[in-house]
Length: 412
Ligand code: PMP
Image (cartoon, rainbow, N blue to C red; front, top):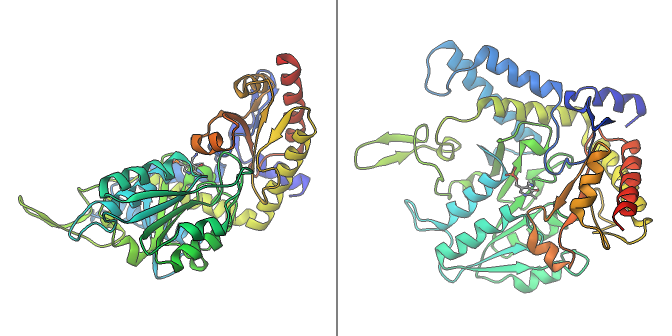
């Protein structure tokens, strides 16, 4: 991104124009949540101010407009992730709900027996956010299946051969993240998913940390289910999606039974409607879907290639600079086209580093990043994590490096 263009982009994010502890805000906590541009705010406000009504049942004009807005948003987000006619998209409250929808939907019985049965195996990687681990622990417990973990090596990388060894005719599901939120490492998920699919497993991709900058083309992935959140792609919080093959989404027992997902109801029972409504019981966050689609439009306008290039350059700048500081270990230092840099400093707790950086107006995240098993495996414990978005600058990276050096001097 050119200098002038970056400034123009940055000006679209009102939250960034403030000072924190008398310093300009350097917001480097984008893996937790990104900020929202004016176009997304305007789209959501426009809906709330002109078109707000409940969807799908109304004959009145506002209800029809709201239904149109909702279904247009669905079409927009589907296009954004390369879904084709064989795919469907279900709106959720985020990645967590989407992953629970899959793990629970495959492990409880509905009109048909549960897809995951006693003696089956579920494989997840050792990189996963708790949201792509705990639901599978629960699914295994519920169904009498066994949970197996394909562990990364001591550097935090996952290898094809290790997955090969675990796959068997008993493997029912393989679930994997497209990018570790704790280290920034990106596993070769295209190959890993293809291998698992060839072995007959249903495949699940947690795209939460990829959707904000990588062009995800569902049609080219061996992926039955993909989950992501709007708030990590410049959209609203409490909004997300589960997208996948129609045929496999149809096998999920709904997580939420209630209005809008039934064909008929008697006092004794109910018949359920088809996708996507079948998995969207209750009134959805319609403004959220409108905002999510506007966020997808924003990313498309910037361009995935330029976005990845910009974030990769910021990450490399930060990783190299941090490695030059005495006693700092950067996790997955060579992670390609990642927007996350995570590190530990000998003798200084991440919480102290984060607190001092905040005094300089720099927002980073510290702790286990909801990926405690991975950090335990790497032998590092809590880390400090800086993560980048379209509006971040190399000047902010320099401030981060100076701030970390200052923190180490203070606390050592
Ligand atoms: N998976 C990954 C890799 C994540 O980084 C996150 C959010 N930190 C989640 C899942 C959960 O997303 P959400 O909280 O939006 O449901």
